[in-house]
Structures are given as structure tokens and as C-alpha cells.
Image 1 (cartoon, rainbow, N blue to C red):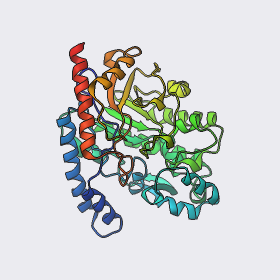
Image 2: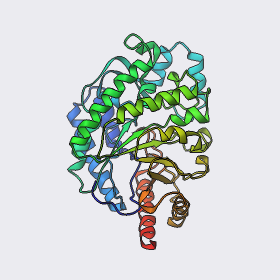
Image 3: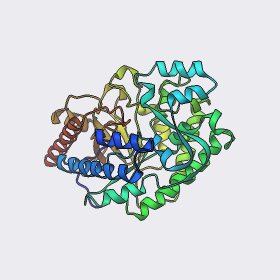
Image 4: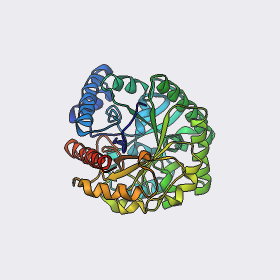
Length: 382
């Protein structure tokens, strides 16, 4: 990655999708338009998202995940052996219908807006998960780019539904081995393209320590958590280590949050990252991308990873954080990290689910601009 300024500004990944993209994606999935027509609409949207990021002052850009229905289920269009299923379809399929209904009732999210990539056969890449997106993004900007991928634990848990998956895989651990293979194939292709920042998303790690035994996050991944939380964390570490083994010359990031599906903060998890510090220390990433803009995240602390992607604006609120508020949060982080180790970003994506964005395009631009303003003031102050 080319030289970055101090306090580089970036996003966690997703950006609100315009109506044209949502409509084209729906029509494509329903077979009413060819895929290339959807891709053309998405191309135009990515161009606009990149312009907004550059104009706002981002130092590292993403494609806003414009081609994805959400941060994990999009793999159903790119992996053999998967089927995209709504939560209502899953309710018809699974044995524990009462338990699943109870889970849905705790969440401030309509079931129709969420789909899950469910494993129904042997996994294989039908097409790249993100390499084609990276190839297009590199034609639009001279700035460094970040590519986001679902982490191996998230993918394994979200895709494993016993009633659909066990005919192919004995258990989710067996499925995890093929998930590792798929992600390593993807990373090899991304590195060949010159992508220097790859972020793995593992949001459900927080559920294991903040809500053990209750599986109260939805994330389309609650069905697969049946073990002791410590065993699940060990499994997550095992998968991440296997995915990352042997890769050099790239900045790997790990994004872990407490849920980004609702503006009602009371439905989201809370607790200090201290509960995950030992787990983080065993995952060989350069940067932890963490949320710290709300009191739900607890106090800042130093982790084993050398860098922190510091979440200092809340993507779920319409209020734009003033730069001096962002500065105060960064000043607290400077007690634990040197300036060159701190990246600035929102807590999470601006649109975790395509049909349920947490922010408007206008708000996303303004919040990114506030980050860039704060970064400039920090650089001048140093």
C-alpha cells in the first residue's frame, strides 16, 4: 500500500444502496433482467460511491459493497453448494421452530428483509467473492483500496443449517475446512491484483462473550452455535489462523462489532472488548477494526495487533458528530497507540443490509467528511 498519512480515514465497508440498485438486484434474482444489466447499474453506483468517498476526504476507499445484499449472504450468488433463503423459509425448514421464532421476536428487524446463504451442497467458488469487484474498483481510483470478506467463522456459522447442510457435511467443523479453502483461494486472487488491505468481518464473536447461551443476535448465524463459548472461540481462532497462514505483504484487518441491524441501541449487544482480547491475540492480523463511538463498547485498551481501526462515528444515527467530539475519542486512543497506528472509521458499515440501510447517502457523506476534518486537525496538531 502506498504511503498513508497519519490517521488514515476509511469506511468499514458498506454504503447505502440507491433504489436503482435495489430494484435491479431484485429483478435479476427474479429472472426478469439479465445479470449484466444489474452489473451495469451496480457499476454506476460504485462510481458514485467512490466519488463521494474521495470528495469527503477518505484516504482508503471501498466499493461500498454495492453488489451485495448484505455483508455475508451475497456469497450465495458466488459459491456452489449454497442457496439464498429468507428467514421465513428457514423457519419452515428447521426443527426448533419455537426457538427460532423466539429468536426473531427479540430482534428489531423484519424477517422479510434478511436472507441467509445456506449450505445445501459441496462448497466451491462459482466466481470470485470479491476479486472482480476489486478489479473494477481499481479502475476508478488512484487511492488505496480496502476489500471486505466475511470471516471464516461467520461464513461457517451462517451457512451451517443442520437440516439443509448435514447431507453434505457431517458437522459445521467439516464445513469450515471448505470455507477456509474458498477464502484462501480468494485471498490469492486479491493479492495478485495488488490489493493491500483485506478486512475479515467476524461480528458474531461478540455474541459468544456478551450473550453466551442466549444466541440473541440474528446475523443469520445463531442456529449453529451449540458449543461452550470457549470452544466456539477456539474454533473461530483455528479457522482464522488457517485462512491467514503464509500470506505476507498485505494488511489484514479483523472487524468485530456488536450488531448493526437496528437504530434501537437497546437491541444491540454491549460489553468491553477486553473479553475478546486473548482471542484477538491469537489471530494474526495487523489491524483490529472496532467500534468505540458508543458507551456500549466499553473503555479503550491496547491489543496485541499493532494497529486499530478506531470507530469514532455511529453509522446508525442521523446526527453528525462534530470534529471536536471525534478528536476527544482519538485523544483517548493515543494513550494506547502511537499516531501511525490509528486509522479512523465508522463503527460499522452504513448499510449492513441492502434493504435496511442504517444511514442515508447524505448522512454517510457527512459523517465521512467529519472524520476527514478531524484527521486533518490531528495531523496539523502533530
